Image (cartoon, rainbow, N blue to C red; front, top):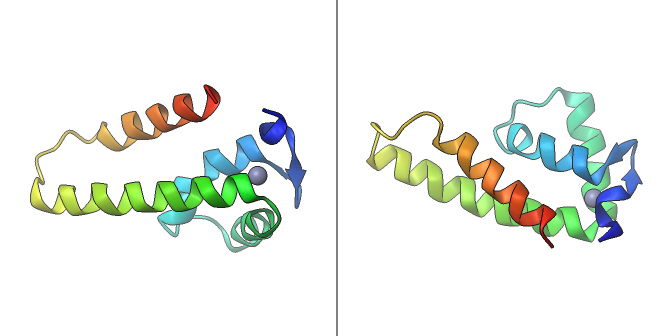
Length: 89
Ligand SMILES: [Zn+2]
């Protein structure tokens, strides 16, 4: 789909997807966060992906709280799986 080639607020959709997990963690700099939010307001695809990722992150956090011994690479593997899923559409 051409969705990944859109550039809004100076950010491509691909870049937004890369930044989303930091965004959801509150780790983005204020300027990046403002641009990402501007992109999300104008981009339905990224908004939908962000809400799916937010739900996933929330579930992952809950499971990490219950299972503190989960491998630290899990979040990274999960994000990669999500990206592959997105790229396959
Ligand atoms: Zn987008």
